[in-house]
Amino acid sequence: MAFLNKLGDFAKNVGDKTSDMVSVNKLNLKINEQNKKMKEAKERLGDYYWKMYQQNPWSDAQTDAEFNIIQEAEDEIKNLLSQISAIKKGEDTK
Image (cartoon, rainbow, N blue to C red; front, side):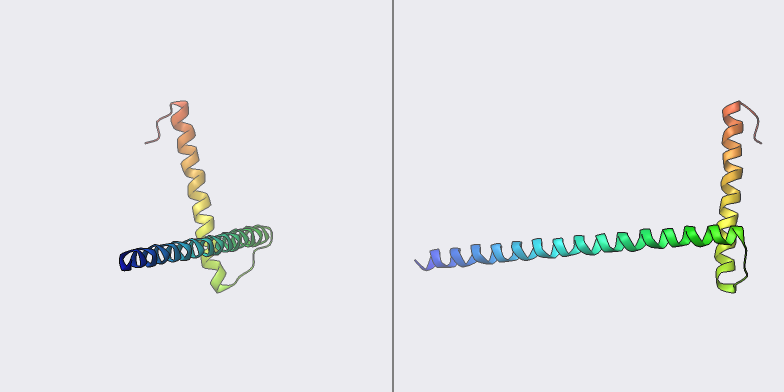
């Protein structure tokens, strides 16, 4: 009988731990959903301010460096797209 009691206790502990893991996973999923919402909102904000800056540049030491990085990346993308276009047309890119 003691063996069956121990087996029952073991099964209950496993069930409790499984339930806890499911609860933690659900909470982690909700945290990830909120992080995703924040990331998307920050991207929209960044896009908004980048468009505003392009239309009417302003100077701010903290943002200037970031805006310069964005501008340099956009310029490099244009250059790379030109190279891709040239390759597709069979032009020599070297």
